[in-house]
Length: 122
Image 1: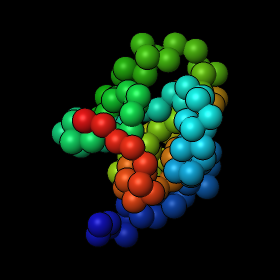
Image 2: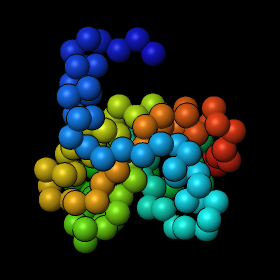
Image 3: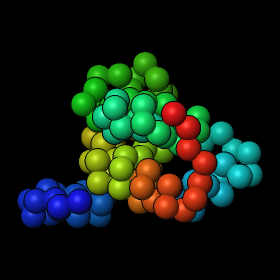
Image 4: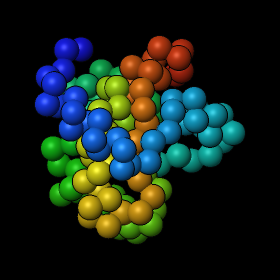
């Protein structure tokens, strides 16, 4: 995907200040039977076309508005993912600013998940 230079700079700056994990980290946790609180921040159409099994959809455009209903405890773990890890990093920064203390952005996103041969659902 061809991203604009200012967007890439913004994401690079944000990624310095948010916690990240890899696709492999999430896959390993799920393989162990852990209930990983996955939130897909992509557009609704992207989520409908395919997502990680068990993921909840809260799009980036409404995340700040709806997150407290889904996660009332600001210390709850929340693992965010998007297409590649950029929108989820921006979303993680926003949740941290709202007082959430255990937010993680999955670097590689859904593309990394699919490219790794992991199961998806629609």
